[in-house]
Length: 622
Image (cartoon, rainbow, N blue to C red; front, side, top):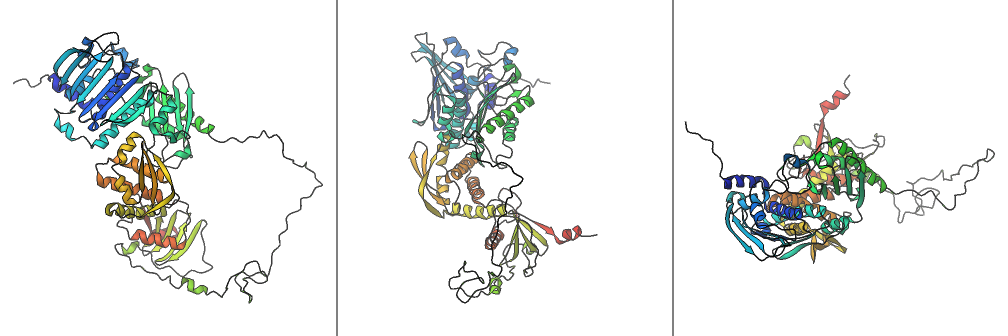
């Protein structure tokens, strides 16, 4: 029988490796910029064309490479960082496997120009699809200049699965932000299609954070610092009042490397327990310094997942450090007063006289006198044009009506008995009677009503979310605007990644009712807002919808429309604890049962539940 196992050609092996390391244009930017930092560069320029699909160029002023090093750098597992296996646990550099350049050269056309500062001439190398094409001596600047063209030109299946230019460029911006936030002493410039989007001069860490994510964070950041024998933690966390419902800026860095660590994220959120509403997010920028021997960064090709030897101990230190930072933000009462208050000395002979109350025992608020005053014997409340009221007419029009289209009969409110003055009331409950029967609001959270099969409970917040969602979604799809101008426009400041994505949803925002006027430099004036979001911060609402679109991807239009409508509905819906009038309860329930799917919110949460009459009877069965 013929042997069937064969060695893969180097070109195929490199493409397989590239599938793990180079996933999209952002991966190329990450690898090349990290190589520049390892080379000691303090100034890096990134030039992008068509979101990196056409060309990516990274220029640095590092120490460059010799002719031999330049050629070897494109070989697999050729590295200057590792000599023995023990070196894997003493890493202080970004790259170490020697796979980056070989992987990039396997799926793109690469040109390298590099020169050492102490040499007169440099080296130029051209490689395409792992095939070496040319090497020559050239005159070039000190450092390295990588030009990567036609990414995935020889792997059309991979190129086909790339997202839209805006999505891919957003990923490039995110990768650069992660690197820039951990290297504030390095100057970064990012150009996209010949337009400069990032200009980050060398600065302090706090200033770098503000340069990347906007000056609005300046008043929100609290210093975090903990120095132990196991780990040193520094950085910033945001104040609790700055929490948002959507994605916040959340970064972990360990030994100068970005890290994705859900376990430590729970430690941060644990410190905010009872300080922020459930489900909301806070921003944090936390930097860990640990002994390289206590971590393992060699568990993932992209090196974003890192394993700690003492994760639980680090978890406790992190939670304590964040709690300490939050504790310092609480205002402190100053008891050091120059003049102490005059407190009289206690005396057994001194008697405190209780206050006296005066009231008219003959006063009747429901009686109208002949001279137009309401109440007998007291002229303090006057009823202009007073007339006797027929209180019976107030409830004349409240006849039960179970006619609702598209709703099962067993889920419709049934007739309730006429109210009487001796009807029992519930603590924390408000009751009312609408066109469809009697409703009761309980604890400012639920609406109770009688239906044919038992007792229906409606979550008022979720019900309003369902109603508003369908209204906003209809406006987006039909471009039916319902906008109102604002007297003083709010200023919306976006980062480069956010500014790139907002263009894809400007039409949808306008359809909802937002009017955004570009001011340049990533700034927009919010001069119009949708009706029905009074009391909300329009800047935060727009940012939440923008972040939702960034997570969903702007190339999936229906999903983006759904996400925008849901985000705005959640922001504008009535909150738990809000007391509703009987008319408001009636309008809300009528609108809910007119929806296409009143039982659930758009994200699948239960809106209403029915307690069957049989279940109620069992509670009182002997």
